[in-house]
Length: 431
Image (tube, rainbow, N blue to C red):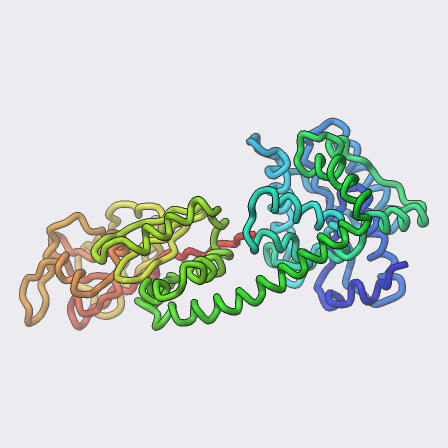
């Protein structure tokens, strides 16, 4: 019924195979298919993982069902218990907890197979259409995407639920049924129980057609991503202050694009950094782009913010959204100094004797520069064109009341002493 080698061949070189086993029909069939393939072809080691949410009493019996099923196949099972925080959408919170558990499990080279099928893809596309999703949302579920250090793969997206049911019955498989799947208060359940049967009465191939549309939309998105790549390459230009290790784009270069291409480029750029804003919130980009040259506008998004400074727009997240701690004594300047919430610092060159400390700008600082005399630090930083949001967290090295050096700006200090700062990163893993 299924051509197993062709179905799973793209992932035969994986380090390990995991199956997300809920105990339901779809994941049970998936595990049985992979187990069958492993007995006729060389495959990576196969494991199953069951995430126990504990949201309903009947779910307490599912780990034992999964253990019995895996024991019958000789497949090792890992049961992971998670806590689902209370919130507006229990369904979404449970999904987030489940995928966080999967991400923590996967190591480099691992593949996690999940059992979503063609009918799931059709329902996802309809749900997103009804929510007014853009093209990126309408591509629905990809066959493969990154998760943690590994990959999550949905190999059954071309198979209907009916095909999986016939397979399960033909092989005598048993599975559990989640009672919450019958609750029409959940949007997906309402589509599955009330809407899709009506569509299939009139158009029997509706699930197949909707899933095919998702594939076409993904191809269209691929073309738009290519356009975005070209536009972003032009907007990146030369890296400004590369030691910051912050991503930034030239505002004028983006402004020369049509509004639609601006949004397309920014969606592509932001998609790995944050959950994308909906249509109503794109006014934040317009305000940031059109602000006066001396303004420092901010566009706040779910997982970070865009800050405009020095003609560029910068992505900030993580520790960059927090103020660093106050002054710190540096008792052993021959050793790197970890800064609280602000990266790491070290000295290169001759370090004067006596106690040193590191602090941040308060205003009114004066620096004695060889050949230039006493200069106001604020003016010197203006001349450096350093982004404004960096200046308040730029480490300053003091000996008593004397300002010795400014981090990563060798012109602002003595020739025999450099203060090297490794700033915090915006690194994050967004799924």
